[in-house]
Length: 375
Ligand SMILES: Nc1ncnc2c1ncn2[C@@H]1O[C@H](COP(=O)(O)OP(=O)(O)OP(=O)(O)O)[C@@H](O)[C@H]1O
Ligand SMILES: [Mg+2]
Image (tube, rainbow, N blue to C red; front, side):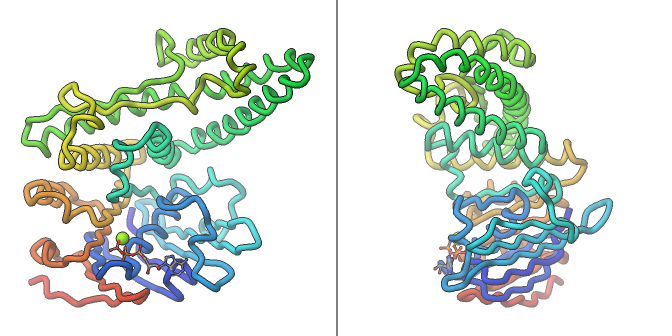
């Protein structure tokens, strides 16, 4: 799939921007704080419904304005389509796909698939479990809208169950109703955990292949799912559900005391290993960065296999952090993937651009297309 054009109105530091992209590399360069990442952010928002940098839509509105508008037009193997997002500080975000308003965020998924790789992605390795869950949740949601729906349902059930636990604290008679919520929680939660198990298994295999190539066959990368409920077979929702309910039963006393649910996808994690050692503790900066790149490239391939089309790839300021060999490997393996690259130093790319590429310079919220002679 290819993005043809992007229109931004009052989005971040853009008052009114219209750009047309190419099918190959789109290199967006400029000094710091000019608006390069803002463009990638708008694209990613159209793919996943949320920004990769903030959960607050109000932050995205240009200062002193009341709302923003994004329109993205796409070329897909089957047809062209458009995605529009309209946000007003006083109203909920409205999204249209092919000019038809959608009712749920799940309906946006799958229209534009995008993988973003930015320096903040090192958080997948360095930070806690919630960052890691966020990454796989966003990816799986793009591929499987029913997963996003389950996540939303699960969070509602979890909130209700937690507030019931608080109420029971004052009124023990309510204890009887807890079982109903536990059952609901285990039913939806087990579906989420089964999907995560499958996803991480495939992601690990593919990331391992990519990482072997990036490290000249030297390093073995593995991702291991650590579910909060360990069923004998994570391939069966029935078994996960059964174990889930048992764990809840066993932790009843503790739950009553703490007024929080002690098990479930909200407590899942996965560990990233390099040659058997935990990357978070033992990996060098470069190894961690390469591992994230391997995981992102694995994600691209998974999307291709599951949808039949390559996603668009958004590389935010990451090229300059890779050594020349890794950078070249990356370029050689992008093939027919439409790639958006931001950088401050254009010289790294002068020899990489060819026909089917475009170069844009960003200066304080204005974008200038630069004409190159590709020979
Ligand atoms: N809501 C907003 N309204 C107006 N300007 C904003 C808003 N949010 C961010 N900005 C401005 O956008 C600029 C940052 O944009 P962006 O993050 O895209 O920069 P960048 O070109 O990627 O820089 P760097 O090279 O440092 O990553 C800053 O000047 C910031 O003040
Ligand atoms: Mg930036």
